[in-house]
Amino acid sequence: MKLERSEKLFEASKKLMPGGVNSPVRAFSSVGMNPPFMKKGQGAFLFDEDGNQYIDYVASWGPLILGHCHPEVVKNLKEVVETGTSFGAPTELESKVAQLVIDSIPSIEMIRMVNSGTEATMTALRLARGYTGRSKIVKFSGNYHGHSDALLIKAGSGALTHGVPSSPGVTEETAKNTITAQFNSIKNIEAIFQEAGEEIAAVIIEPIAGNMGVVPMTNQFAQRLRELTNQYGSLLIFDEVMTGFRVAFEGAQSLYNIQPDLTCFGKIIGGGLPVGAFGGRKEIMEYLSPLGPVYQAGTLSGNPLAMMAGYTTLKILKENPEIYKALEEKAIKLEAGLKEKVKAIGVGASFNRVGSMLCMFFTDVEVTDFETASTSDTEKYGVFFREMLAQGIYLAPSQFEATFISAAHTDEMIQQTIDAAGHALKKVKELD
Ligand SMILES: *Cc1c(COP(=O)(O)O)cnc(C)c1O
Image (tube, rainbow, N blue to C red; front, side, top):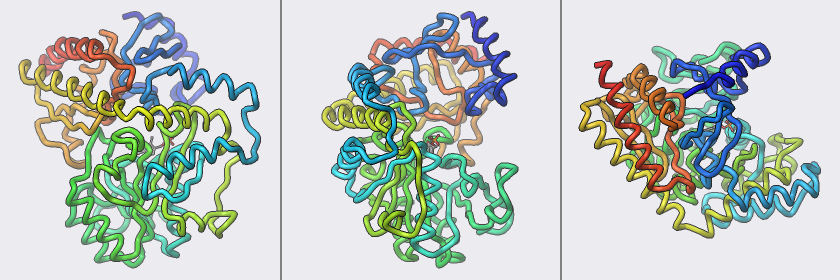
């Protein structure tokens, strides 16, 4: 595999943008190589500037559940672009997207569109604080909710209810109001509520974490979380930016049979264009401006292009529920094939999968939280990743990300991926 032109483009981009990229993981720093520059996507394939072709398991980090350039999405986008890209005024299309989501997901009575997942979680927290009149929020170790200040906080040592900034530029004052809890630990969240329950505005969680590899909540933990937030009058916010319309059309909340007070969306809801959204109970959503006192706004929010890509994608998914069954069957096939190779070659690995999101961790430990995910051997992942890329398989350039199947992946592609993994895992084995 040659990457000459990509190398040149990267050298140049590094002089123009910090790290040469507009989002850090794209720089490939954790897999020990420079990134290919992409030129084109088609179905399940990506093509780079050097003419290499890859089977894409990143799907732009989740949005492209129908694959690149789905014909209907492209056609509708072309049509709408001819009639104006943004008006900063209400359109019928926004209501169509809202109606589709509200009709499908029982916990969503009202929704607001924004431009990214980060904006969705940031605003959902402001709304929760405004609605409850409380200051503290709880998040979980290893969960990612975008990059707003209140969420770039990690657990402090010692005090249970006192976080510390995970990035310079986030103040101690901000960190004081974010409590970091252990994912899947009932004991830990009970202790936090016992100590500070009356001050907690909201608990925000990725119900199926996808930003420390794939790690689902246990059912017991999920139920206890709903009980505790109800008991203390704190809002439960599900961050379904990744899982919404992915693990099921109705999201992770349908799998756990839990109604969160607020839900955040992103990724698939924008069909590959920049969209985020948050929604939930009407009485809470009505606290937002212009109806209520909590402020939020957006120049390009709900613009016709983004709404059309999202609407078309959601409509196809909703009208063809068999897509989810097919996605899961392919994910099961991939997981089973990888497990077989891992066993035959004798590499320590642990798997988590929900629907069409999966992750192979290079560890012998069952992964249930951030601590166990962190036992993964990232050096091994680097070797695996590079060997897969060289064989035309584009995985996420980090151990701690999900592998996504799209509707454009075929059984043949899955088999090709399993065969490639056989070769790659032999190289990984040489590290033992
Ligand atoms: C991707 C992601 C976000 C952030 O969304 P952006 O659109 O990148 O700002 C938030 N939460 C979760 C769970 C995500 O996967």
